[in-house]
Length: 355
Image (cartoon, rainbow, N blue to C red; front, top):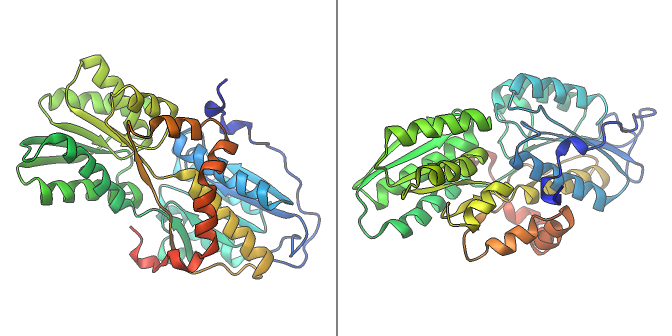
């Protein structure tokens, strides 16, 4: 199997349990120099966006050394199932947890309980709710990433486009995704007043449901200028539909699933927007470990802004090479990692401004 397709289910299932409570963060036995018990919980362990975050987190734990690290997540997007997995993780990852989810409200109480138990928790990719007691968040400016997608589309639609664009959101109500969609819609309304923005429509994160949803939208709006999704499955399913229908409309989505990269490579999708999930997973885990070992478990406060970028014909081969292995990814990201971790406060913004 190609290394890019390495499944998260290969993450070791059995890790050493804590022998006894001791000094250091939470109830763990790691302290400054001992082995730390940590982990990451993600919303969907099967989809690329979570796969990337886990690989980044595992890479950071490996580089920092002496860390028992466990990754958990449901096989499909299922908030209540992830809550249970997160709660189970708190029993073994006493020294710290990175938490990514797509349904922040239902994690408010579980996260607060973990913090009350003395477990440092870093919110990843989705900003924490007020009552969660989680005060440190690592994530993109998702509104800006939506703006970026819209501007890339406008470059290809000419100076004064007229017609419709259709926006899809896999999980409406998830701030990360809603902010991307709003960035797209606002940019079109501002810069292309003769374009009618339709949606965002729900497209679902499950690949099968996603394909059916987009097929329905394409059939309903056959003369649309573009179909733009803000999630993982949106990218490759839109490309698949475009090929099947021999469509001339623009299609694009987010993330760097191998099928998505293939679609950019062959020109089916004009871009994909890369939130650089590996980088976020790496940064959040590295800063968590640093806080526990060097700062008695006290994390920074606020929103740590992590960058994203465009993948198009100009850099697709470079990104495909980056995605071949976790080592290749780390080597590509290392200059950025060194810069961001070298001046962490420069990236901090108020948590309330996260979008």
